[in-house]
Length: 546
Image (tube, rainbow, N blue to C red; front, side):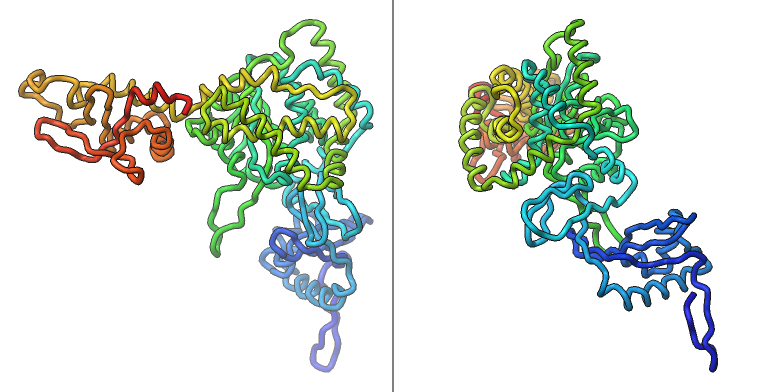
């Protein structure tokens, strides 16, 4: 009820049929917007919800925001409820608790100290005000439930010790725990992908990795393990909420279409969502710095033609446990029995340890590891790919060293890359999209060589020369007109500009100056000399590792 004057009388006007109060207000760390926590009594219990202040004070928005939760508002009383809440806020908010909230987990900062949100738990060192995680939707609320620790750390640690002989599996555990390091080391996210035929233990890798932070059982109603059966918007919401926590997606064949895998790999590596329009301007896009853990029967890099994305993917082909046997099956069963009831301890403990370290010292230690890894990697792949992907191997190597130090794992750290680096470099060579595209357009030209001036004599064409020349081909130099090269590349799914840029960097193109990627080539009997992309075939063979 609220009181109002009617003539010379004071009358009571009904507002709602249940008691309503504003209990606290919040400041969103991301954009400074205000949220209010409202409480109301329903079925003899007090219920609460935290919603943006702008919705609480808008009669058109308060009904869809709260009515479905049982809040006593409807289309008949919404104006009176909004007026009542405005009066209540004016009178009481100055005396209410004011707490910071974040719609993203992972690293957060309130201007005073750095903290880390693992679900609804804030991990921080030293005094300071609490920071609460505010899930913007039901999916994010499920993640909070998945991140609640269960059982004890010692049982989990003993179970993980049994994985020490399996480097492919341990990479999953190290990658999961490495994700918070990316922010401290100022490194972008990347992808680790396990691929092989079905029923070889790939999902077990993800379960072990997920157990460091939360529920690893994807068959339960709430788990950190998701499937590839998602949309771009769904992925962006997941990545935006987790931010500095690992994203774990099982089985690429469940994707709604192959292109979705490529799009998600790209988005994960880029580290932010797509820009989308709003009524006024554009919507704010969420950002993340994460490691995506993926499994599938096909290698993830085979889904993308983008060289930059492929170079940020660490492909681990092969059975994670090396072989299948009754003994391995028993070991997996014992592992799962332990981690399904003991999880969510290692990640927060590792973050607590990181918060006590000197960040500059961590970066110095990482730099030494990165130099060593880069020197080893560039022996197997070209310098460009080693530069892009070397940091990923280095981050995981560094994380492994730190995890053993911080969590006191009961065996001496043994680098998994001693056994795995050869396979990774072989896959990365396969994923050299510039080299792959060069071979493709060469083969494309061979199939159409009669349309390249110089492959036949003028007399051979007789009275029927081609109506359109694709370029010229003389000796080592294969020249494409711009439309022809674009057609050749895009027909196979390659983007022309980044591919041509990489060819130029590797000196696979004949150029008249360092500012141009084209040069003139004679095409046709009339002697026309248009600007063309001239591929130097022998230079590509000599410089395939350039």
